[in-house]
Every structure is written in structure tokens, then in C-alpha cells.
Length: 458
Image (cartoon, rainbow, N blue to C red; front, side, top):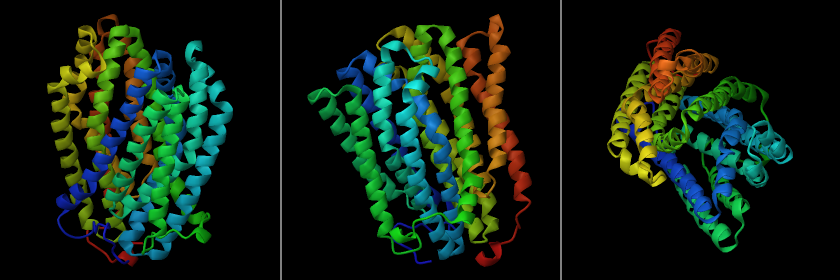
């Protein structure tokens, strides 16, 4: 397969420089996305009022819940296209590209219809306050008009990542994010469009990023070139996308549900702890994305090397991605704690809320690298083509253990404290990582130790 200027050969040479070349633009993309989202919240909170801020904020978990399952399919697209790229199989790579883009458009249209039709009913089921439900419904109905673009961008960027191209998605996201911020200011401050303006700014920026990804794929000169007349569903390819992607998406759904349970427990600790924990969670997000890019690296590098028959590199990729995730977690996690009071003061001006936020940061961020290890090993396992097993382990470990902790230990009067609640995170990360490690060692034995030719590997 002909190499392009943005393509990264993950099957030869030193791993660390190439993994950093892959991961750092991806990290920058994720950090930019968080900053742009924070700008959205800041604009609506500053210029539209508390009700509008609450309306936008109350929809985040619902949006994640409805999109995670479909976004999981983009992980399947990444794994398959990376595998076939490593093998140099242009025909199968092309089928993955055209099937994935078709699936992205269909899933986006489906989410648009469901979101517009059932947004008010779902918000009622979520017991959204009467004071915000009308604004939240309006926001969701406008926001879900952008679902086709959101899905197209995520699937397209996942395909580009599979051949090592993390730079162009960063460029496109940067342009779309700047447009989003400017339109937010225009629609909310100048035109007084309130939550509808925030949602409209978001979807217009999403369509810009989707258009750039679409144009990029149409102009590729290799197997990733998108040809409109070839759009359609290849059934064997779709089945493999589902086999790998649906478990990953379902895991995201379950994580969203478990976070709702944890937030409900935080809500029993008073308004000060709710405010402090929410602010700390936002800061944690920046640390998490710095580690999660190595989950993506482990997934893509493993897939491409298996496709190329370079089985001797599987263990090396595992070790390299683990060390990178640990380093990022230790560095950024402890920086978050060190600068915690200053960072938390951006979100709150009250000393009790800042102190409450520091309780969470001190417990979670100091050892956040454990979460990075857990996520990175999942990337290695999924990169080997196993989708169901890491999902089950993560559900039982990272989700089930936390819910069990809340139902037992946290209910004891002496342990009904913020410290006891937040300590459930490192415990679940450690146990889940060890379970994943056992699975990795078992699954690794199913692959040869010695390298093979790409065609023999397939």
C-alpha cells in the first residue's frame, strides 16, 4: 500500500518515537475539545443565566448515553482498517472505509430522529427540574440535528488514525472549535438566542469538521480514498465492525450509567461537596485525555502489527503504551493536585467548595495513572481483535465494583464520607487492571511468538 505524507508505519523501527508522534496530536485534539466545551459552558453561564446553564449541563449525560453505543462502532472501524493497512490489503481496507462511512451516516440520521422526537419524554424520565426542561428540550432538539456530522467526523477521524494520521483531525477540530466559540458569542450575546444559539453554534462547527474529514477522504490517493458510488454496506465487514465495536460502545453506556449512580451518591454529601466534586471532575478530564491517547495508540499499533504479522511487537507495544500512560498520569495528575486550588478557583470562588474539590483531586489525581494503565491495556486487547472480554471485565470491575462499594461500604455510617466514596476509584482501577492483565496474557498465547508474512497472518 502506497504511503502518504501523513501515514505512519507502525510495523518497523523504534516504537516510542512513533507512538509519541501518533499520541501527541491526539492528546492535543482531546484537550482542545475539552477547552471548547468549557468555553460553551462559560458563554451560556455568563450571558444567558443559570437556568440556561443548568439546561445545557443537564443534557450531557443523556447525549453521552445515546451516542456511546454508535461511537463504539468507530473503534471497530479503527481496528479493522489498521489491521488491513498493516497487511497491505487495499481491497479490505476500502470496504472498511466505505462501510464505516455509510454506517456513520445511517446512525447519525437515526439519532437525529430519536433525539428530536423523544427528547422531552426522556428528560421527564430523568426527572429534570421543571424550571429547565423546556430549555433542555429545545437545546437537545437543535443539538441532535448535528448527529450525522458528529458521527461522520468520529468515524472519519478513526479511519485516519488507523494509518497513523492524527494531525489532520487535529487541524479540522481546531478550525471547527474556533468557529464554535465565535458563533457562541455571536448567537448568545448579539442575537440573544440562548440555548438554541449554543446548540446551533455546536452543530454548525460539527458540520464544518465533518465536511473537512469527508473532503480529506475523497482526496486520498490510497485505499482510504472515499468514492461516493461505492458507499454501501459490505455485510462481512459490518459484522466485524459490530463484533468489535458494539461491546466497546456498550461499555461506554454502562460507564455512563455507573457515573449516574456515583453522582447520586455525591449528591447525598451536600451542596458544597457537589460543587467541589463537579469542578474537580472537570479538571480530571484533562488528565484523563492525556492518558487515554495511549489507549488509542495501543489499539491502533497492535492492530496494524497483527495485520502485518509482526507478532513479536505485541508485547513491546503493550509495555511502551503502559509506560507512556503511567508517565502522563503521574505528571499531569500531580500537576493537577499541585495547582489544584488555583484551578478550582476558576470554577468556584468559595473556600469550602475549593477545599471539597481538593479532597477529590488528592485521592484520584495523585494515582490517576492506575486508570491510564487500565485503559491502555484495553487498547492492547481490543487491538488483538477481542471486543467482548474487555467489556465484561470493565463492566464487572470498573463499574460493578464501584456500585457494590456504594451499596455496602459507603452505606456504613463511619464510611459515609467523601474520602470513602472517592477511594472506590483507585480500588476498582487496580482490580480491573489485574483482571485485564490476566486476560491479555491468556489471549497473547493464541498468537505466534515469531513474525509471519502479512498474508499468512490474515
